[in-house]
Image (cartoon, rainbow, N blue to C red; front, side, top):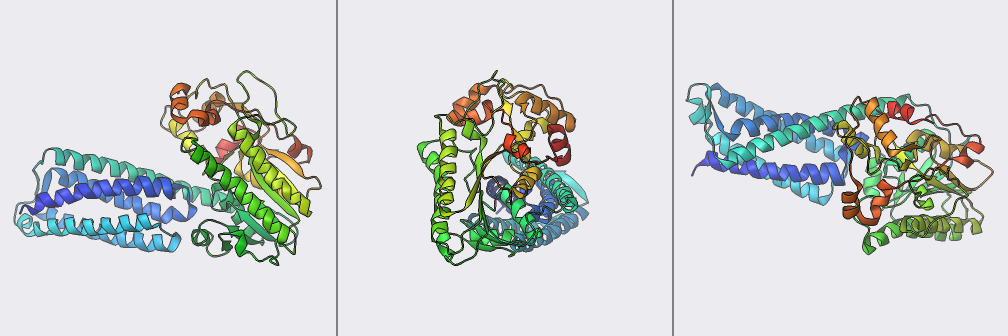
Length: 482
């Protein structure tokens, strides 16, 4: 048996499994680069990636003879230590999904197998003069070298993500405390594990409020907030005599994603409207009625504002007869039903929320790669808000006398082309590469309107109530975030 060749074949399998784990788990389902708690894990991944990159490329077409065989064994030893450390850090910072645990188990078994097979060749290599000996294996060598390049790039990405999370942590520590009220209250939050929800819950805890989280995965939510919140998976789990002073309803499946088929639309409606109905049903039975319901909605309520239309939309403008507009309308109607039980209801229509997580990183990706530029015509309006202003806006309305609808958008609305130009100037990249709209419409269908059309939405009522934005202009917001 050619144990060396078999070891290289197992390495190729390791490369494919590793690519799946990185793309599916670390990037898509777990989004580690957006988790403050994943900073150490990402740093370990970056170190391991450097080692794996060297191993894949170095073993793809060379044998390590003489003293280099000892170096190879030492490198494997370091990799094993890092892997064990990674397991410990993962288990202490997040609840891994079953698919990721299975993948890691298979990776560990496969990795152990190819290490042992390579170790069998060590005595023979030690007996040879110290040198790298060229020994290619055709397409297998090419594939292993490609794996080495890929894992190396992944390591660079993880290193930058770890650094960025560290910078973000320092920024958050230096931010002034957001005061939601003069006394500690019991707060129920839905959608707490999302980008906005995580920031909100941590701000509420820092302000000494007691937080209960409604989540489809209460164990994951408990891990996310270090056991500092109570977690439930259904409003039926909350007793009618449980005291809740304020409900903040942020629940909703991600709007951008799979094409809006009938099934996908049902998911989007259910994750928003059904959850809101369950809140109102609990309120109806509650012995201690909440004094306030802050319920999220979106500026998609206003539908599409055709390009060339310079009007400024305010809270008085009406919805349109299209899916995203009707979704927001029905979402708000479901929330408004709480008013019949004596609860003050404030409906918050969010623009695109900018921060270290959420939509902004994906919007900036082409700019970072040097291929930023107009999306479609580039003339569509982009109404946005910095996440810190969004949280401060909620706190501002905590004891506001007026209920109703408030637009949560910054005073400066820009075109998509202007956004790309400003982002490019902040991170010192060009902005010239146009992205045609036709392929996006072909691939995304109706959903493409979210990207290729827009609304020029003004925070009329929020400003009239005396709220002052910390980031009223896009450049200042991008500079703070980036």
